[in-house]
Length: 212
Image 1 (cartoon, rainbow, N blue to C red):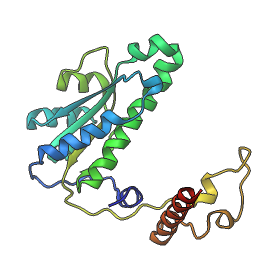
Image 2 (image 1 turned 120 degrees about the horizontal axis):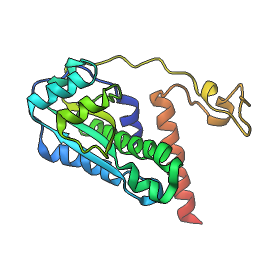
Image 3 (image 1 turned 90 degrees about the horizontal axis):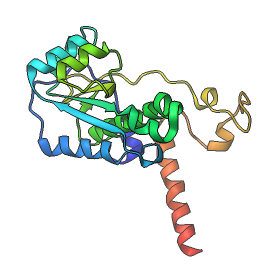
Image 4 (image 1 turned 135 degrees about the vertical axis):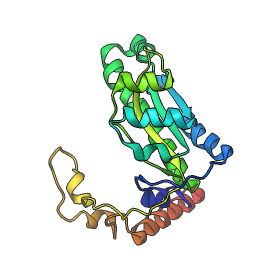
């Protein structure tokens, strides 16, 4: 599965099979988080993997009683060390770049999991102190999200997404191009045909560059 297919097929899963994970797969997911970019390459992201069932129950409780999470055989908690990035970027680093860094790591792991045939869900709703107590996180670490990881026991439908004309502006903020397809060819709502055409264009560009 290539990257575009992974992005197209990824879903937020809330029902998991009670089946053990291959630790090699878990390791590859974590490696994706390690490779994610951070502001100035400060590498302020810290990742906690929780396998213990009792602790997973406590984490689900801390996530405002989202008990479905506990059935996932692993929880990945993405956190950052704000003081580390604050040294270089001050208040903006502490309040903004930390969120960027955690989000990049989380999304990288979610896409890696999908590519490996695993299911995930991004959970950002939790009581901070309760979550820290549940898994022994240090007070100076800021938790950003919990990612339940396992094998899907459901197949969620593709969610409705806005068209590209709704979310993309050209040149100036608010400047919509009413017929975006004039610029993007047959692109529409992550359709497989559009993805294939995009990949064909990239391949043609590669061949052109090789001839130059």
